[in-house]
Length: 54
Image 1 (cartoon, rainbow, N blue to C red):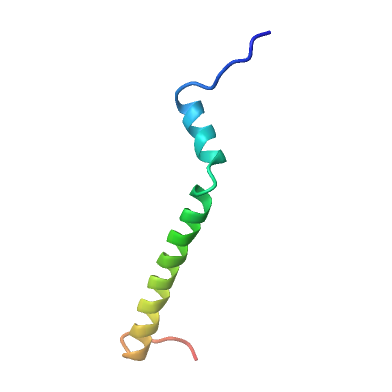
Image 2: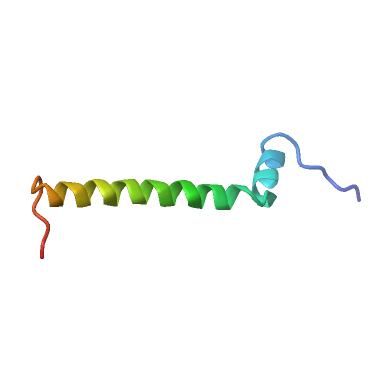
């Protein structure tokens, strides 16, 4: 029985799954996004633009 090599999108999916930089990069981008959102909400609460529960 011959071993079937991944072709096309299967190969790309496998390459992305096994890359060691992809998951940490996504996590860093998500952390920066969450920081930006919480910073905007915090500043809006400080300036009384929105009402934050005590």
